[in-house]
Length: 357
Image (tube, rainbow, N blue to C red; front, side, top):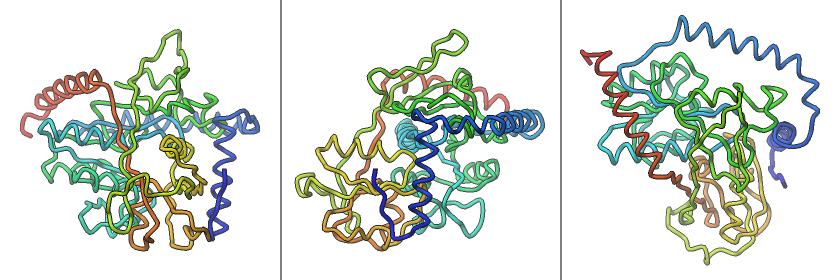
């Protein structure tokens, strides 16, 4: 994996991130020295969850669907959220999304995205969801307050992006996303491993969705029980020129390219590009990285192809040979059927709980 950036600090962050990921998802074992810290983390997180569930959790009148993960690193939540929002819109719902808005600094919170919003204000993922779906998106650390803003906008279904561990906001449906190559890594909790919560947490969610599972992929057997999952496939779309928004044929670009990825799992993006017969030279950056032109000035003539999430931060200084590759998430019909049935039951329950809504 190669890293290139005019900023030494961004390169250092990438290398540090890779060291942790190699230990969590690879064969390295140096993090075992942090076992005392892990036990402290488990104790504190357990107490925090107990306190919030008992004293602070609040339910909103509108059904809440949480999409999150139990591990650190990219798993594919954003494509799944976009797919769910579009499906809900097709069914006649008016969904909205609440998000923390990592990497953004809005003028105020809760912050409702508009057509004039920038990634610097909202964060890259919320802006990408907004531009792909047109749904109401609100960012802020207080997800209850954000949800109320969406209710005022007329939303009848709320999706909480990366909200699995944000227990203050009560939820009706939980979906955990797992990477189909990395899985749960070494199975340890932070910081020894990548898990925010134990793997047994997957037994308590409504669905486990595995992003592009490898041929021999299997979730761990927990307490003698096999965890079943829905398989999600990520399909690449047409290349789009960042500066103009024009669709570009694959044949218009040379095989060898600079592949830019400021995401949690850049290798997945590289693998997608290889499936399109590109020879990608990976230029990896930390997740939610704030790009400047100098960061993408690689001093070569190869075109730059980036993720859609990164593209929303680079449009204002895009060059002619910069492109991005949109992707879509595809799930089996059985998932959508079961999801729709569960949502109907939840909606009926919410109406009985909040009859004046």
